[in-house]
Length: 203
Image 1 (tube, rainbow, N blue to C red):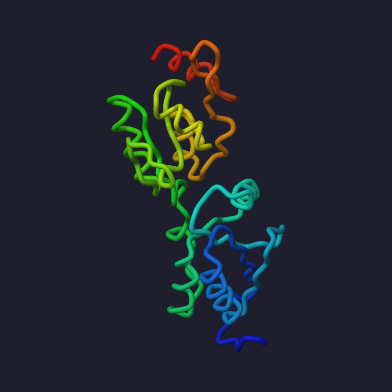
Image 2 (cartoon, rainbow, N blue to C red; image 1 turned 180 degrees about the horizontal axis):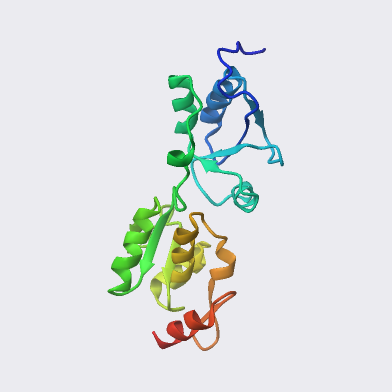
């Protein structure tokens, strides 16, 4: 059944969705179509915007690499309510939206990273909670939180992941910053700058 078109606000705008609730996605898709826009399940060269509630999906990372703006769901509602195509800058999805980041750090690094997480739209915590925590940020590949995070399958990453994600304005893939336990109980990571490696080993 075709939807009645109410305006041309989104004429020639191609939208795709990722990590949006199924019911919510259906509602937003209908609004886009009623504003003369297009909705695609995939991500293409012609995609104008990616709409998301959270970061980190494969589609999210592809959009970032392709310089396709990733914006929040409330942008669609604002365009519908005001009958105009709003600029997306104020609706860009924060790098850590939807994440609860546990910081296994000491001061003053703890306070610095807490501010970074909150500025980037995430929730900062120091207690690891099953089904709540999404990431563990640490500089030491040891300890109860480290071991629990590994056993739960959570990403365990260095502070560098947090800093660079905030600096670049997008959630960077965790694999390059992942910490693992080696036989000497020290940090190993896929990617570290020489300065980061020396500071980590001395902490």
